[in-house]
Length: 198
Image (cartoon, rainbow, N blue to C red; front, side):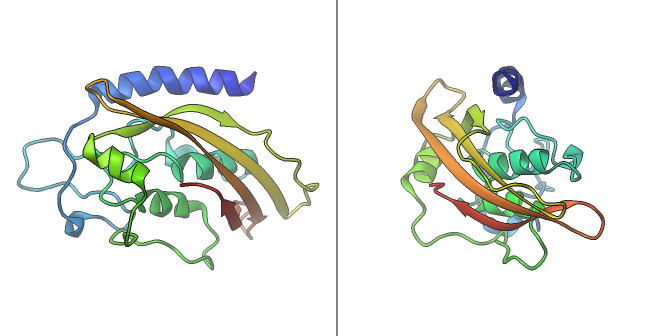
């Protein structure tokens, strides 16, 4: 039931945000900011683009870090949704998703790119497209019991590639097994992450 409500909200907001989203993919990785997002071009008359894909209904600053389920949702969504209109590289999702990682985990950098990005990313770039979230499933596994400082969560995010001109691409599902550890401030941080994300 909760998954259906989230899906409905995501689809409604996706349509509205997509209609308002700026077009054009930045051409140079040198304009990337520290969080993996394109920096505003001082010589451009177009408005600056958000570092968060318009297709993603998530305010990263509003995630309740004291709620492990909210953190797990945010991690899974941000590490899945790619937006070739705003992302400079295929690893921008890892940079965004890394904001909830334990500081000791290795971090992707804004300028990174894998030697051979996957076909999904290449399709997004070729069609100036983005991933629209179709479903967020919280019931894909039976995790071990929670403790006061460590919890395990599993998530599956199903997306479909699309663009503003009506093109649609593959539907794909990415699964995540996330271990969260509570820090000294009482906030949950990703201490381990496994995925079959493409």
